[in-house]
Length: 188
Image (cartoon, rainbow, N blue to C red; front, side, top):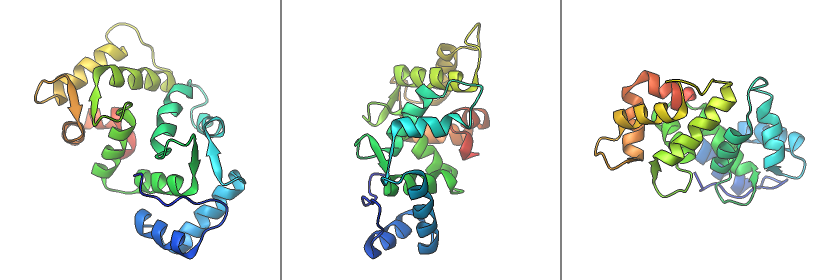
């Protein structure tokens, strides 16, 4: 995902061509997205505060901040602290496309907080906590993040190394509708 060209307020012909190729959107669609992005972000950059503000509107009854941190980090592929138009467009194209495998690979990159190529239980627990907060879920009894993480790992960790590779995560989600809906709702 980190292959998008940096794009500011102007969209050069080479940027347009490259973003169209990377995203699968037509050049006209890229122009439309760019125009809308600049209306919302006149500086050509989306900072974390604004991102959280916008994202919270979709989850008015939950606490979106923690989850937004993970989503923002995944979109901010160059770790600049801002999402530029190229990063935004590529992220939108991945979340909007029909291929569940690509969506699950993107979800994996969000769950792999330390970006070491694996999801450890502590990372999954942080994300589960954030998902529970986002959805306003109770964290009591058997319906708590720790139990959910144990269930997930018992189903997905095929080689029992206490971490999930991208392949284990993607294949585990593809093989289990419940896990896919929980871990990557947009990949159904």
